[in-house]
Image (tube, rainbow, N blue to C red; front, top):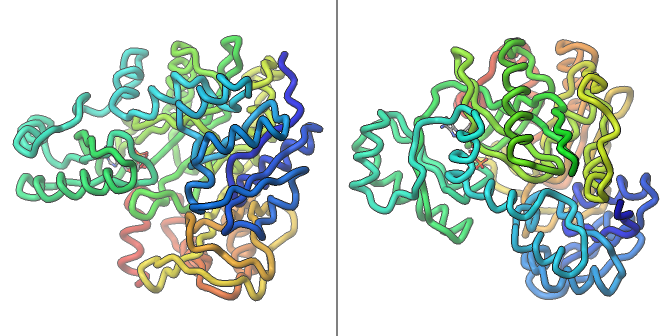
Length: 450
Ligand code: ADP
């Protein structure tokens, strides 16, 4: 056991606050960092100590030398990276360990392996996980790409090997479009990830995005906490997440649990992580990627299992053994998470900035809100547009949808446009209510809504 006494939270916004709350309940001191744009951040005030990082406001949360220096100065024995920023940076995890600071997350080698989508497919295939047909090496030129795409058979998808957040991805339906799609995927990948390597894989028509939350300690105990259905996406980015998946076949569900936990056991994974799959209309399962961090959508899993994922993640980093068995994980009811984004659904989802002039949150049983927003808060223009999450819970699916409808109707954020009106439309949509949604659901509906 390597008891953690003080954690530096290397993040901002709702996830920083979520981690600080988890620490408080574990009697662990927390240290916040903030950029010049985040002086008013609520997490800054909730932490036991806070330190500014001057200069570039995005770089502030990426500058690992400065962050480690602050952690040492403040006598932190651990760093929690949250999601985004440094959370999947293997060099950062190594730098923490080198400086005698526990990185709250998986081993650096696993972060590195799963940060490369091609390498992770190879590794997962070796331990019996079904993967989509595709290339294991980056595609270097268009000619080679076209040849491979023809071998796989159109439609194919071109993907950034080191990508995320739905960026650097292009669907190619016909050979004639390959060259322009290849170029735009490569350019987008370079722009967002600083690396242009792309690979090709078979495109699955109308899949569901089903992901398995895994949790593993340092002693080979690997459990799952069920699945999340993240099929409601806009341009391959999640918008609504649900646990459990309302229409997933039970045998398929069990198979996903089995495959994910077995693979993580064989690879010696530790900490929390998410194994993402596509499930096609015939219930075929394909691994797409593994995320080695806590995810935005972790609250839906917490809600149906009662397991505090961040707290258990901290205990695992301390060297604790998991305190429960798989049979003891109980799944109860349905939880739905709505990402609240400062963006204008009427204007092609343009990010909005402004000051929150009126803020009224829904409440009542089965409603959870994770946000760092408050009345008078000025949303900085420099970061991701997600400003919070609404999570609802009910014993059955119909009840959860009704709860969501009521809670979304109560939710008022004034001062700038948000995507709350879009969520209100979705929960009233028949296909959504019937659980009939695939990854193309929202992009198709948006054509109709607009
Ligand atoms: P990212 O890391 O950018 O989130 P993922 O590989 O997790 O990218 O994929 C994000 C989404 O893109 C998936 O949920 C799915 O909607 C779509 N997608 C990815 N790969 C495929 C594929 N081979 N076929 C069909 N859709 C895909």
